[in-house]
Image 1: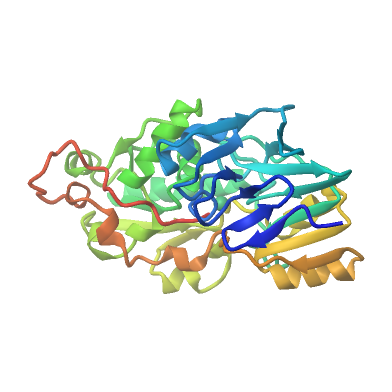
Image 2 (image 1 turned 90 degrees about the vertical axis):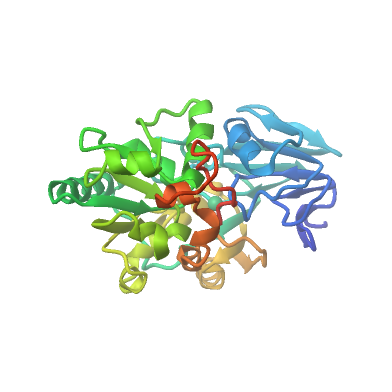
Length: 367
Ligand SMILES: [Zn+2]
């Protein structure tokens, strides 16, 4: 019997159903696990996603037709039954379940098992074949309690404020930034965000997610919050002129990669908070076991090491080569800060409309 999914030039392809999952090129029919840029490309004919992900996906792909699936719903695509369940990664992230000829496949997309107030929790799905991510698929990756991480972020902010220093927290603009905003304590001071973050804050709010008051970081807000504010910005804005305009500021990064000693220091952050929207190593093993799958295809991150370990445990496991990247340490580079940051956000005279401070470039983060 042929595999339900193969990898084509355009991405994960279901020959029986004639559709792609998270294609990396425009295709007629795309089933989308979530709206991060390595999974949701623009230009496809028609999209299918989990119901709570529609507005965030719309922000990413523009004005194309988007169909949604809700809990308990399925759709038949050329006789392949497609359904979804939450993946707990970012708002609207979902696993995709395919049934055909008595065989069930599940594609996890990116996922995590930790609590996140800004998205629905991961729900295990039973299947015969599981396609799982493995961004953090090595035993060294073990996350602490996210509530304790939130506590230490607020503590860091409070200390900076007491010393008259602005706190700048770098995090992926889709998902991580909103998750962080949701746990900040607004009693400490005002919260501002880079334009790339603000666009997605709006999509989250419009989707019904409660977030504290957040203003766009402009010349005016910068002055008003001087020395007291928390500023949330994408990693691409770290370093360079944008950060320097805050004067006496402290910079931190929230990422799973902060678990690696040396990464924080090399990137020049004062603090690193270990917080990821991906499953840690025990989380990956828990999810794989809960699927009941006998065959596991592992993609991106530590795929080879994880596949080897699963084979040792008696599963039929192998690496599936894809172009998904998960959360990469490289994505924390700051080269394109100039492209992403408007003059207004830098606190400079732009000569343009002072109300338009969003910055036009697409966020580059992928996790
Ligand atoms: Zn992702």
